[in-house]
Length: 448
Image (cartoon, rainbow, N blue to C red; front, side):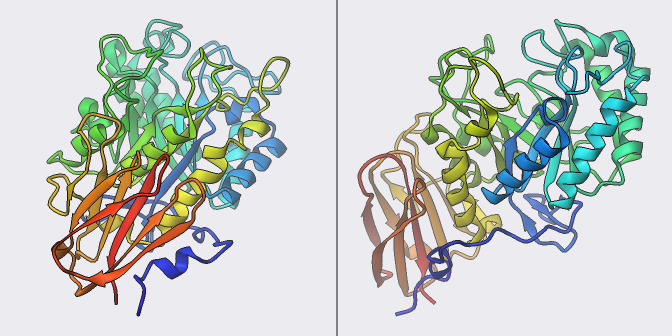
C-alpha cells in the first residue's frame, strides 16, 4: 500500500524550513498568492515584532530574528515608528519637529541596519511607515495629527524618501495606515502611498484598516495596492475597542475577501494576540485562538497570516514580562511551527475552499460560530484538508476525490503528530470522528 504523497514527509523529525526565497515577491498569475522571482509559491508566515526598530539594539534585533526564523517564521511585521514621541535606544525620534521632510538620520540609519540583518537571514519585512493608530496614540486621527499637520505634499515627499532609501532592498513589503481607516487624512495617506509606489514599484503595498475592514474595502482600485490585508477578531470577543463595528470570525472575513471579483492575494494581517492578559487590558489570547486563526485563513483562500503576541512592543522592566520569555509562548514557539511544517508539505496554493459543502457534506458546524469547520480541496481533486476547531464527526463525499483508493489521517496542531485513520476504497460517503479535546486537522488524499 502506498501512502498519500504528503504523509511520509510530515513524519520526518527535525524537518528544515524552506530555503531562502528569491525576493522580491510578486503576485501569482491567477492573483491568489505570492510567488518569488523563481515563481515558487511563498506562504506568508509572519510574526508581529512591531516595534523592533525603536525598542531593540542591533544585537538584540539579530537575536530576535534568529529565534523567530528557527521557530519557522519567514516574515516579520514592523513599524518604522508607532508614536511621534517614541525614541529608539539612542534617544532618536523618527522625525525632527514632527515634519515628514525632516527624517532623523540617526533613527533611520539604525532602521536600515536592522533591515540589512533581516535581509542577510532571508527574512521578509512587512514595514508600516508611520502608524495611524486606533486610540489617539499615533500619527493619525484624534491624536498628534502629524499626517494632517504635514499635509499631502509633505506626505508624498516622505513616501518618496522611503522608496529612494529602502527601494534597493528586495526583502520588503509595505503596510500603509495602521489600525484605522483613513478617515479625515485620506489625501495624506494616498500621497504617501503614491510617493512610495513611484520610487519603489517592485515592493508590494497594502493598507491596514480598522477591523473588520480589509484593504480592498478601503482602496480596492488604488494603483499602488498590491495585496490585501484582512483584520478581524471574533463575534464574541470581550474588550473590543472598535465601537459600532461587528467583528466576524476570521474565516468569514477570509471567504468574503476570497470571493471578491477584483482578485488579489490576501493575508490575515492581525487578529487575536496570544498573551496572559497582564500587559494589555486583560485581553487574553489562548494558543487555540492563534491556531484556529492560521488554519481558518489558509483553508479559506488566504496566502498567509500573522501570528500576534503581547511582546509586540518588546516589554522589558519591572512588572513587565520580558520579550524573550514571550517568544517562548506555546502558540507562537511550537504550534505555529507545526502549522507551517504541515503547509510546506502540501500544495497549499492549490487549495480551493469548499464553501458549498460539496466535499465535506456533514458535521461542519454552524456558519458565524466558532465551531465552523473550514475545508478546502486542491484544484486537481487529490487532497482534502479540513480544520475542526472542536472535536467532532464529519462526513466526506469520497467520490469528489480522483482516486480509487484514499487514505486519511488526523493531524494534531498542538504536537505536530499524525494519527492514521487508514486506507480504503473510494466508495460513497464516509464519516470521520476526531480524537477528543481541542482542534484537529483531517486530511483525505488519493493514494498514488
